[in-house]
Length: 267
Image (tube, rainbow, N blue to C red; front, top):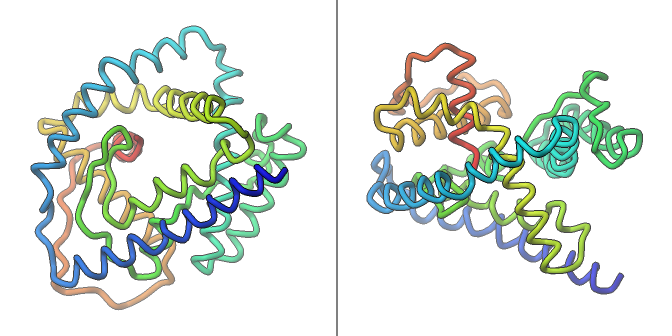
């Protein structure tokens, strides 16, 4: 138990750093309006690297996982990791001042963690306790922290200076919190990554088919989706920035655009 508490202590300190770092960087580095993609040279290089890793490692692993794993098992794995993420979503809903949604999300976790056998079975959704998928980047956005420059991380994928806090929190508060041991941690992270990639196989195939410049499409889809999620969490306001330029959009059917945007947001 002492080792477990020590791990929690390290994770709590990491959370403090995760919250403070993007605030400092975005407020100091974005005091003036930036170009749409000031790090494009770096981002394109990392994007190309990630594409290579995906083609030769992640996608084959995901396709093999789908072939050898029965659908009920894959659903249970997704439900388990989704239930863990719901805990963090609940915390972010409360931090955003959305107390009704936070209470509903907390109830969702309670139902799935107990009656749903630790989250393997999603009983909350049929009970109309929907998933919200909130994270620290959205919470900082609701608080008014600017996104900063668009940023592509190796393996982790598209992000921004502000949203980079999500990587620290996702590694700090995850299923690995329940497990002690480096080997077990790595196996859980691998299973989570493969499961996530498998869920987006059809969406990424769609992305390959519609994007003339896949990097630009991914960047714009990611930024549009993140802003829409942040706007959904803000209280209604009549104030609109007159000098805010609209983001370019792509003429896709609504369902296809949502799938492509989700795939762009996935690591």
